[in-house]
Length: 145
Image (tube, rainbow, N blue to C red; front, top):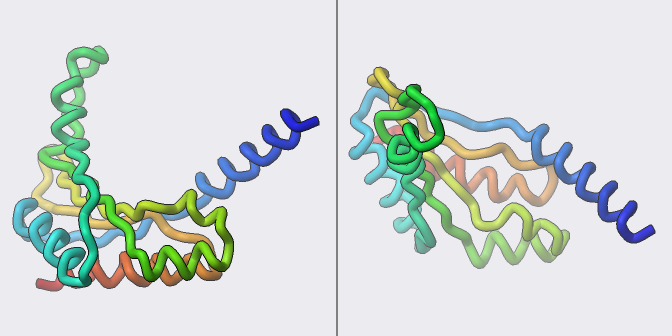
């Protein structure tokens, strides 16, 4: 019975997460300028970047190893961080909102494109809209500079 409940919970969670949309903005500014602006906007809010995942570098480095000839990105990074204040509020509303932490913002430039995309995954209605507002403010600040 516990296994069935776990399977149903996992299925429901996977459906809810995969149904989320992505919020994306684009600019013709250089990748390095946009990445710096994202970092500055995060730090400027008193937040600490936990990790910068160099997704583009990893995909390029392993491209041949996985048998692909497709170059996906010129550059692509994901910045992960958390906000003690916002996280506490959304987890007091529902402790299982832990699944949404840490928060991530990506900066990516597709191969052969001048356009740089900046964005994040969308968050469900309710208390998590505070997280979405935080991320949207950071991204807008970065692309409007």
